Length: 242
Image 1 (cartoon, rainbow, N blue to C red):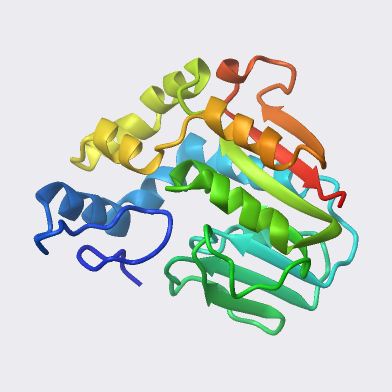
Image 2: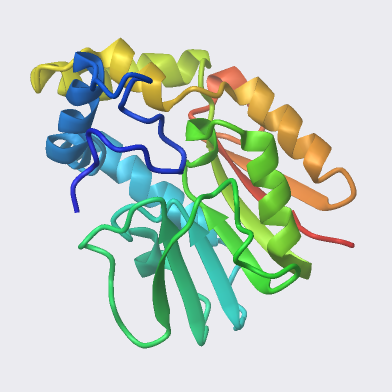
């Protein structure tokens, strides 16, 4: 399934069409990058190694059997292979479903807007998993409220939050993804800022506000006790209390 270059689709990425129906050249370039080069940038080399490490971090402490897991922004379905919990129902969702998503009994692939989970009942999911999704969203506050709504009391949310605008992340991006993106002939600053629109301090503040009555824990990479701008990312493990 290719990234749409023209039509408006609800979800975490901006539409590619102007109000007059014309597709701007920069939107065409963005769609071309997502279709042809994105996986090569994030799945290989040092970036791919760190990405696998983060998938494992998201699953740390989650080994108990559950009934329903909901993954938001599933992309190509990489995270499912790291899940340790047994389950009768695992929902892989994204704003557009890709052909690479695994199809097997117990796994459902659904088109969902991460900011509007109205098709999912309150308190019906044992755990929500979001891998590097929050930084992409138009309305991250609404998304977090929706994620909390669908989780059962006592259930968990596992959220990967990149430390956008932090010193260490910017240095690492300049040494890795920037070089790769420019090698493929794309403007790094444009591609990165178009997708990663929400900075870490705002995302952290929203998490603390939306989950103020819940148990919020976090770990970081490379070390949890470092200031946020000397971390690459944080993993939030949130248990809903009421």
